[in-house]
Image (cartoon, rainbow, N blue to C red; front, top):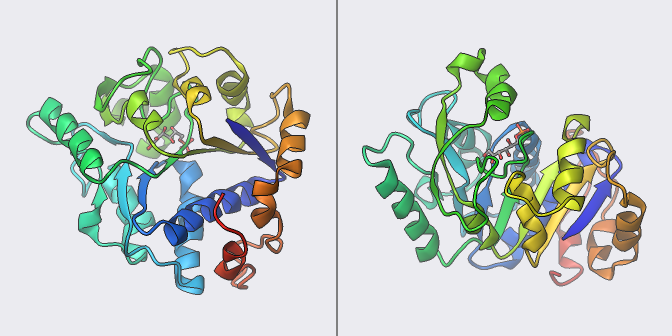
Length: 286
Ligand code: F6R
């Protein structure tokens, strides 16, 4: 695992969007594992901006989302299918048929979970998996006690998660009680994982996931087992890490990050074309 601490949320978002852009540019058959949630909204906004202003081409991409609420049809305003269509799919050049989410309305949910795992296999596996982290320590909706080897399945949402997502639904009792989620094992099968966490409210759970013991009580701690996992944080989310100076030292002395440090300063939403994708082509992909 490597931990990259950026000065602020915009810079952390920019780095994650650039990592995805590199994958889209350098892999002829990128298979992206995607997350939803508030943290990811600005990553997708940046990817859309790169598509519009810098010509980032998504036509070869296939995508698989981590999760979907049980019982919500795709056109429900709270469904993750709706979220993805709104924030990314309709705004870039990716064919809808190449974007996948579990179907939370399937008559046979178990069969749907198996079908979803099969689709990921048929695509050759996920090449880059984007992740957020919940207050419960979940990745996807892998709530506490999820087995590290778990596969796509139906899970009950933890009370912490219901509280976390209540503002989006207006009231806690409107949040669905269950969801289909890729398993921790499914996530760990991805070739590369990138987790983004921003804000002070994530500081405690990030410290436990990154520096704490491996435990199924915090699914994100399983990422310590992944051979190619990058955790990108802003200063606020890094606030409880004990070894943050060491992580900063690794990041600044590691040549593989030269490509990112050479990019011009980040100015998001200014309308200025601050950093062309040419910059990403300066160095071969790490
Ligand atoms: C949703 C998902 C979740 C979120 C996490 C953080 O697809 O995978 O694990 O990434 O709950 O959500 P936000 O960004 O809203 O804090």
